[in-house]
Length: 412
Length: 129
Image (tube, rainbow over all chains, first blue to last red; front, side, top):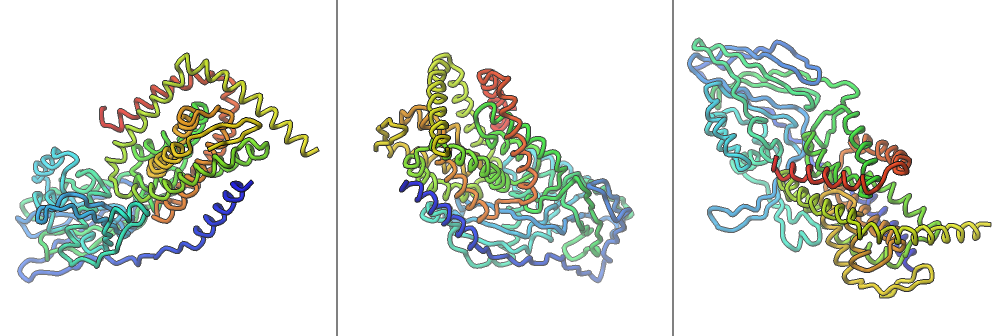
């Protein structure tokens, strides 16, 4: 009884905590690009053939730039998402690991720079570097660094992570804001952390003719953020066109997940969840094991959002299960609460760690977890286990029956 | 520690249970799954308890983890309401349909399929193919 009380007190405390937690809303900084003109050369002109798309499509961008100059196109969405990166790489200057978490709430949900077609080779080289590619190097090598502007000035928060902070599940101390140059450098790393692959943020699609006219087919794939997308043609750091924009519309049943930064047909995750939950119940393991890796593989959703959103979906089924068992007194409150409190300590730390790893690491570790799970499942299909389990299940049934009868008697 | 359950007393190594529970909680809340398939073997094999003690009590222990993990994920902004609202009805409907199908299927066959499926998924995540 004492432990039942403890469990109740715990849940009340939890409710109060949830209620009181007010999180600071970070003001969204504007990222309008500055448009300056040089006296000698006139800035490029820019024309788009459409002003609206319906969940993706192709927009043809044309214009005239000073002859003989390469033309770059910077495209970004008005909708913003969160991006974070944990820097634990050894610093070349000091030889120490900085352990700093960089985080922004202002990353455009879509960002891409289109470079002239003759830069295709340099982009291919970057792709060959694999997972270790660097966005800042890619920008420099393809000359696109002159066009990189929209994410350069986003507000980036820095947290100094410590071991102690990790144990108590805190992000650590908030460090002072960086200067513009450092902010730009870190924003490039965040772009890579958010978008992952080089061809998501760079494309060699700009056709530049000798007379200075240029043409780009901007492909907007399905599943991107709705709302305004801005385009700026860039010839030099200070030679840019006025921004033009088009609207990307999405209609039901396509919905936009604002924290995931992704639009999707809601029947996709609905049917997938349904299928996996059924399969999960049948095999005797929760659906989360299969759901999480599939969600991050099928849709471009951040692993933090997937882990944090899948977890609460089982809360209700767990609660109703506990309620049903407790009705027939089929729970050892002492055992459940004591181990449960140890799990509270673990569950407090875990979600903090999710944002410290990259999507790649998330998938890699998850792969090993699934191998262990597969081994456990395999062990449960061995003849000796089945034999043993049969006996256990028979005893379980008998006791459950007894418990149910006792509960009924009490009622009548 | 002594656990009493329906007239039987069981001696339990609670330190092992707590350390195991803690580790399972860290990993499962970090990766966003329940942890039941790891908790049940811990309590049956690790603590030597019979299945009928474990079914309800392991669920209770895991609920603590799910509750605090949910709260912490929410706190760190790892939550998307629309995504959640899409999944919840699917999870509830699945929970209703599954037991009806389960009666007609052999759990051993399901588990064998699961082993193959999990391995395929694992190899994909590890980048083998």
